[in-house]
Figure 1: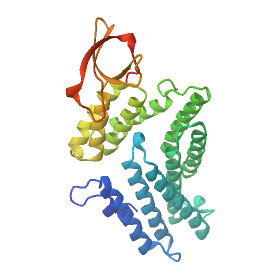
Figure 2 (figure 1 turned 90 degrees about the vertical axis):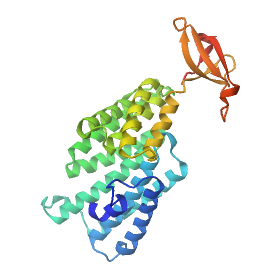
Figure 3 (figure 1 turned 180 degrees about the vertical axis):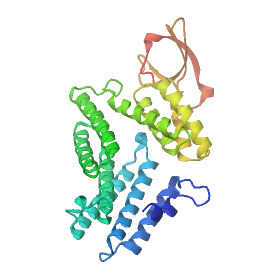
Figure 4 (figure 1 turned 90 degrees about the horizontal axis):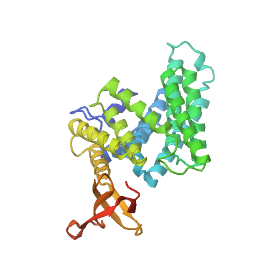
Length: 324
């Protein structure tokens, strides 16, 4: 399946995955090709698997192109449609091939290999459903259910590392759910299990694959975004610098990850504040003076911003709030 998908996923010259809109367009073309070549009901079982591989690649292309902070509703709808199509294809394949006892076949058999491949696709689909759900009380509850389905599949096929990762995610989502039930709506004060899980994943990638790995760069950007969302801006800034530098070296300056890391770095360094009593007016914090008693700001900031029209102010720190 990797060989079947590779021409649609990886550039034959530089050996890097296609990016930006091109990756999505090629994934769409891959689905059309797979439907034409392999999508017939009478086709053999490996052709059915090729169809699932094409669907999964399009889902991956959309999810990679859409990071947590800017998930687009149109893209989420398309991802949901593709995930449901993948699950429907899996269920129909199970019925068509009568696969009930394939998991009990010898591990070297074609049937067992096929069953585990199908299970991997099914678990992936449930994980993707879980990660696209909003972190509301109901959304978190449903997400946990899908994570448990993925865990059961990985347990069945003996993927212990994947089971451990799912357990970590379930613990993090349960912690988020408890924070919501306790009436704590602030992302900065909710339990940090989700953040710790992302930190562990980034650290593991860093140790095993190095900073210049595609996976490390992507996971690092997600972790930096999560830090920024929880108002841990200095940590987010330091990580965003590392991610932007590595992505520029590995992917080049025009890669979507490089661009997004630079955007995040810009947000981390803004240091914006609102002032009492004019809560709707935004200023940029420049520095503190007098041991933190005075905050030096410039503004007010407009959209689009006109720096020539801004003035510098020295205000009592107690008059500033909502620093971000």
